[in-house]
Image 1 (cartoon, one colour):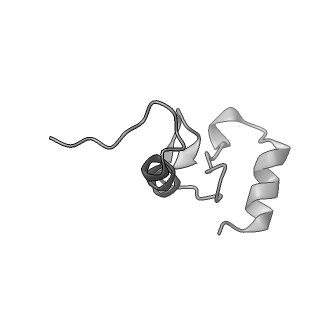
Image 2 (image 1 turned 90 degrees about the vertical axis):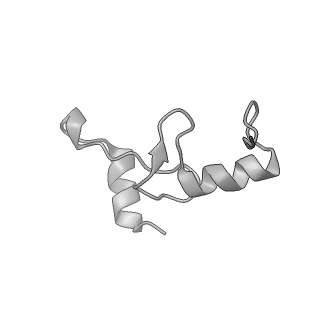
Length: 61
């Protein structure tokens, strides 16, 4: 879990736009965040396997 202070600082807003850190909306992870879904790769995989993300299915070939 991300530190609460980092999450609170992100909510407040940064002085400069380039300082923004994208975080997962579900768990707060800062790395591996998919911009389109605003969640990290781990949460994305869990939700995709459960079928909770519309339009996403596991690829197999």
